[in-house]
Length: 506
Image (cartoon, rainbow, N blue to C red; front, side):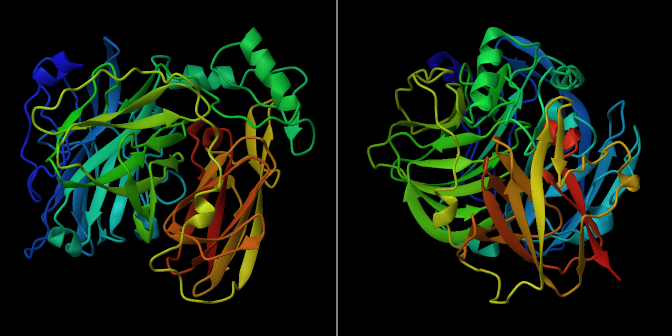
């Protein structure tokens, strides 16, 4: 570990420069992340170019050919300031078509980046220009919504600063989590779709599931038997690596921090199929935002983070300094990844890529305690639609209300939710499977208002985890007309049909 530290040069960490955060990659490694975060400015925002392109990472000593969303200067992702124009030219430098979704933002419907639903694809060597007010503020991200490209790491941070950020005496550190397999995503999905005799529709028969990416092994058979007994499930895919800012714990990023300083961690789960627990180790943190939206602070040392969710955690470093691993523990497993916060002169110990014991399953324990700092105004829902989350394991189909969405032909699909502008709309997600589903609504933020029919005033967010055999109700204001996607953010579940459309009526 110390050898990896000596190969990298620390950057300045003042707000308005390379805030938070990272060490400049040396010449022997390519494609490493660094994040340009800009202070609020008074001049009009200039247009930004984002290129969807190929890049090469070194993962566990092997070259990995992946994709990325890069500015021309090599910055992975982008940041800006709330309410400024989001003036972005997306250039497709890939050999295949792509489409990028601005996850967490509230764009006009025709700039949301879902092929066949809100926009056409951007073809190779073509570009598309986006121009809309940038909101809401917070920790967001961008990712492909074309096929299985997200599993090629075609995703990046999208940080939207509030002007009040500049007044805070704190360093920002962006931590972007992902999972990676050297097996091509199409091959992973094809193996998931291989028929398994005796499996049935979850919610209509035995609660069965499948884990791993290959044909059945004794371990997988045992897992299937556990599912038949009603044990909760996790992790359809066992990946080759779990990444934090494109790196594993074999060669983690080490972030220079100040003794006694305060750090705001902006943590994004950009994985295609992995939920995590964020473990602060020796530090205690203050959870201050979920999915970019402020919450009433909650103290803790470990926080759940489902796929596509984001959390902002503020930590105070001790005055005597040291090295502080910030780890992401794979749900229901021993694998882990992360970064290290280190003050000058700190002794840095190697952190293993596996923990000594498996983590548990993500639950709704923390979700039930969260409260929005700025909740929706008090109003009864004008309508509530029930969306039942189901699975047909014999065909590896994931369903909503018995329907598998045809992602290859979205124009043929009928909306399951119809709303009118100005309504308060409720969505009740009822999970009839033993596996968790992180459910995301495009173009809106919603408030969590009930867990298993227990009403409360919860967090405002855009992605909520619905654990197996649980229900979660959310409400949103219908204030962004158009045709919108609502779907499970496990990439493999989305590809297999766990999606629906929300249609505004004229």
